[in-house]
Length: 93
Image (cartoon, rainbow, N blue to C red; front, top):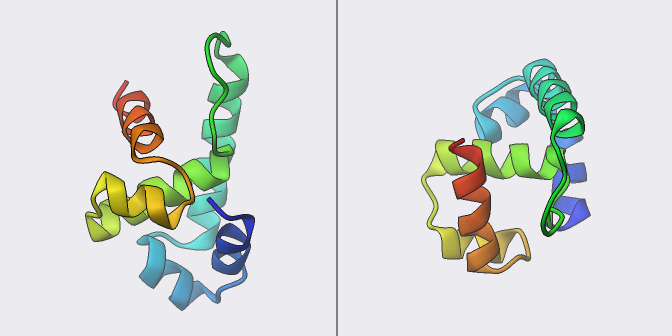
C-alpha cells in the first residue's frame, strides 16, 4: 500500500475517517496497538509481510466496509492479488 494512502486517511477528520473505515480514529489506534503487540509476540517464520500493521488494518477495514475483491484491493494497495489472498488467509486465524 502506498504510504501516502495511509497518511491521507490518518489526516482525515473524524467524520471522514469513520465514513472511509467504519471506525473512529481512536478505535483505529487501539486496534493497531493490539495488532502490533500480537505481531511482536508472534514467532517469525517465512516471508515478512508486505504491509505494515497499520496498512494491513486499513486494508481490512476497507475490505469489510466496501467488500472489494482481492484484485481490487491488491491494485489499490500496490501489492499482488496473491499477496492480498495470503493476507486474507492470515487474518482468518
